[in-house]
Length: 213
Image (cartoon, rainbow, N blue to C red; front, side):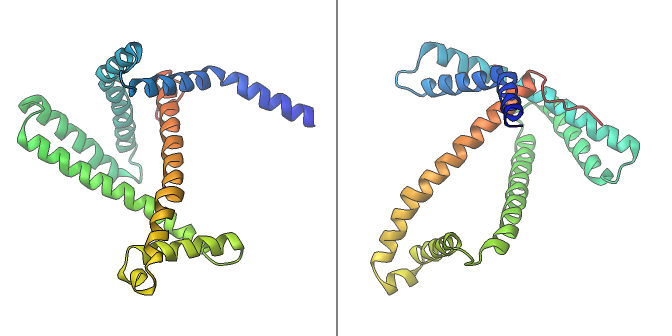
């Protein structure tokens, strides 16, 4: 059983080895791009990818719109959402073709859609995080007690209450925010970016199929 599991893990690693090596290579190239001076090959590759980026974005957008159109034709339960998505896409494309990308109306609509969409996504993420936090934030273990105490410390750090209790509380809170939270935040975003790079790479290599069911 153990040998079979080891063979399965090994086969999975070898099967995804090209993707893993590609992600690591892109991460290294992206890091060398920000060096001063930047590596010439990394700068050239970054600029080329930036210029070619609208093409995969356009392809993915067409595939997603196609799926919404199929949902409209089938009369799915998500019909209002599908209709709004397709109608918005048609409106934005039509304005872009008729008036150009520098048109004030197009830029205003785009900015408002970005703001609303960003707020909706962040709100959904916040609600999905808050729900399990309410359930697990009980001092059942020392770990939970420590997290609750850090949350209280964070609250007192950026409110007059902490300074009134003791001047050392804001200093301790700043230390936690700078070093502990800062390190955790960096680790989170680095892993998120690597995951996004891996997903985009699989989409470009057509390993992620975005086709209607």
